[in-house]
Length: 317
Ligand code: FES
Image (cartoon, rainbow, N blue to C red; front, side, top):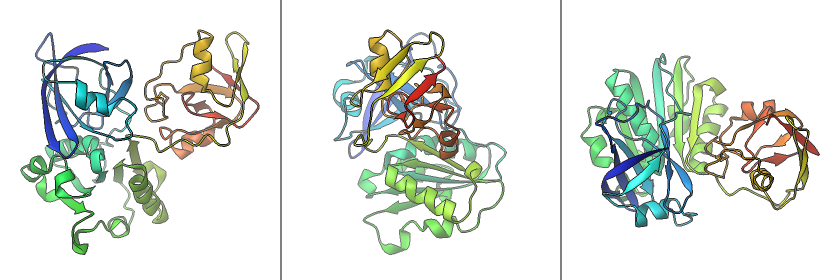
């Protein structure tokens, strides 16, 4: 973690705040690539991930946009209410789980609501390199559309199609039409609320786009069902210790009580920080971080929320 300065905080759309962050010690921050995010530690101790949305060539600042979520568990609300210009914050160096495929011939970008943040950074990068791309940006209304002016004034404005829920029929997102023909060397990127992402990804799959062409980043998980949760055992491979996980506790919570610490952040299967290798047993994956193909391998899982289908999981810790 490093300490940085909040140099600016601005409301840029209904319930969306843009924060600019700069180094306390030098003119430059660690570099990042399009699609990267940082972990931000809140004053209340919890950590949340936010995608960087400025041009990845900029080194003097990071920009993050935060939507005030009424269901916030202390992340977005704390950012809106407690963090102000002039404050110091603890952040991680940028990491990227959602990178662009740089040799793609064409890129199709889909953003829903605040999911625009990594997508905007990608658009900046693609425009900078003169790449062929199209951005479809779906929101409820212009008032709820972050960065609308920045996009309209940008050099890539004519690559962007806005789709407003309250707009007329002619501007609605026609996903099946846009994704009608899967071209080799074309890649699809999607970020937004769960329902929006499922719609785009399922439409692409139905039109035979391959898994390698589809890239996604969730910014929050949907509710994780615990109705079928059962107890199971975790075996620590390095020591042979076997620990029972009751149905109402997560693996991380129980292991912490045994002084076995697995790094974690979002606690909801979104960020991948807690990813742990599974040597034996079948995980019950509840995360949105791993792809379906990665989950099917059953050789890693996210102990912050995922559980076990087998009676025991042997973990590589
Ligand atoms: Fe984020 Fe587990 S802590 S996926």
